[in-house]
Length: 150
Image (tube, rainbow, N blue to C red; front, side, top):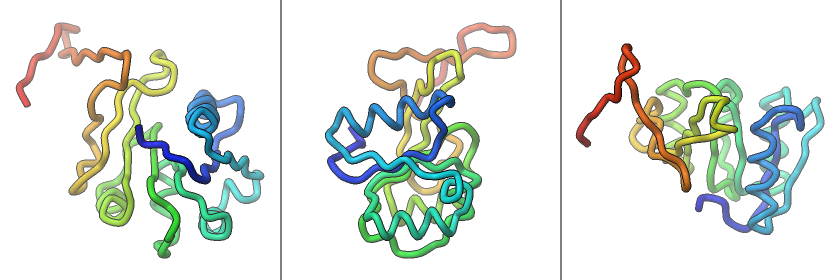
């Protein structure tokens, strides 16, 4: 599992399905969860300051905010998770070289995430393998099962 004991902060509003994953993945592993104000949540410089001041170890950031996050040294930050949209290659390469970077993917119908992939060498468009207790299928344009070999 990618969550370890530490400081985790929540970016998403409670009405958004991703917040469920943020909250429970943090608390189930004994982490301290930080709920951010709208003022901090909407400003990449404020997020950066918060990550540093509060010694945050894990965070969820949408790719648009991740691309704007100041490229400071975050000595306590161990992992960045993103979901909801693709991450641009340059951002993925940078953060993947400096921190553990995970792409969490899943259609809304799957209730948050269906797959997870640690990003290495800029593989930002790879959605990864199914999470525990999940099966994924890739279909072609005719909704037939698409088979491939790794």
